[in-house]
Length: 426
Image 1 (cartoon, rainbow, N blue to C red):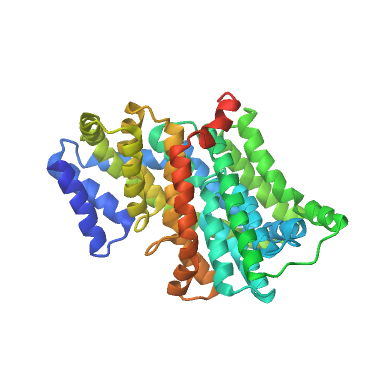
Image 2 (image 1 turned 30 degrees about the vertical axis):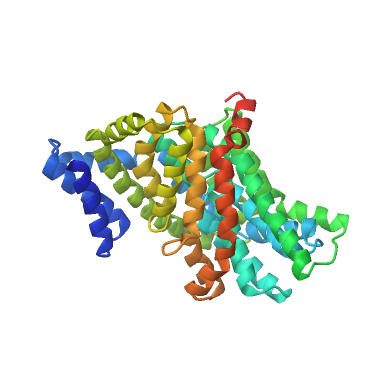
């Protein structure tokens, strides 16, 4: 009865148009009041505890670093460098767009931020060079999902918080899948470019590559600072996020001088707004997850799944279907916080590595970001290009099949996700 009421209340509230975050909190609160011995005061305590979780402190700092990098013109320099490296290949501007998304993903930790930063510059440039706007928007919207797969990743931080796994190990596990997906997309464009005779930029000289590389070096160094600092043991992922925010501000104001001190408060406020929205969703989702845990729902579901004799392959098929459906109407962080406590103990019982499960969930969330009706990347790409949302959805649709094939590969070849962490002895 408790399980039925909890989920029926959640879906009923969302169905009548109440925002997902509030629906999560209300359904959890009503379940506690009606079925639990917990007091009302426990709701306030749980909300406070969830918001002060040390690992979650990384999220506002990564968002702030991304805001400074976006406003400060780092994205523009990364795009110039990518164009100089691969622009001369047939379809090179589209390939460069993916490379730029991969580089910016390694700075921001957010998919919508990657689409906004790279798309606002690249899509117009591709259209001027002879590409169709729909094709350009589809490429950037799809490649922007790498923002949560290539470390650092805000969604990985949330998963680590929900399952108490290592953030550093998750970050390292995302490197090879992120690079592999980027290469898959580049290969697909290269083949399409020869079939459709897409344009290419003039070959850049070696001096031009060096010049653009020097201009982009300060942004690229942030990748080294974040990942190098974490894996050398110099600082924790949360401390790395704080260092990244300070470094991004320093580069934008003093090195590139694309920003003035007067612009800083506005940038900080925009990052703070996004942080508040995301943390509000997380706090309510953690309250919902708290109800699941206190009512022993994950344990009950685990016992039932084990009793059914599901194999790991069958279980992962169900996991992917559930996550793909959830991704169409909920925000990634909320999905992770609701479903990770349920799926994690079952996966552990079936011998599935928790880090591998985390990467599977992140790839599913990538697909959710480009799936209507609530895919965040779709809304960002629509705003950046001025295209209607329906047209943006059509532009992204052809790439969904490739993402699904990639999901199957990641699901059933755990070596792709686990090889690097194991090689590093993590």
